[in-house]
Image (cartoon, rainbow, N blue to C red; front, side, top):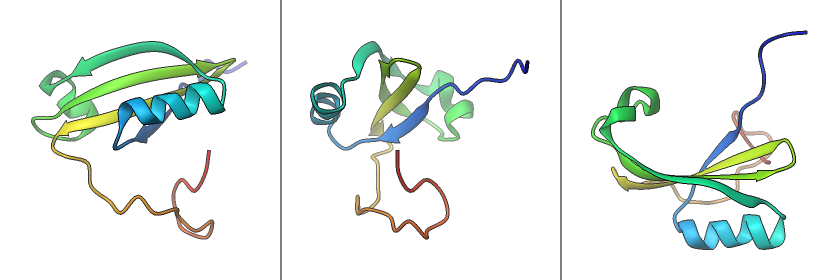
Length: 91
């Protein structure tokens, strides 16, 4: 058996509380841990001077980390990605 294991999926969100309600009330996740993070994790996050809140949610063996960025601000259009786009397309 391998020592490697799947840890979690990270999702950048624009509204932490609204997203938390969706994952808990609609999808049945439960809050596990919420932490405010800063420059101490800049190398891991590959963002200099970062500040964000990390909220880990769990359901069974599945973990989702909601990331709410304060600095720098999150960017992107928030539109649904086509299934033919490279990268994550759905959870």
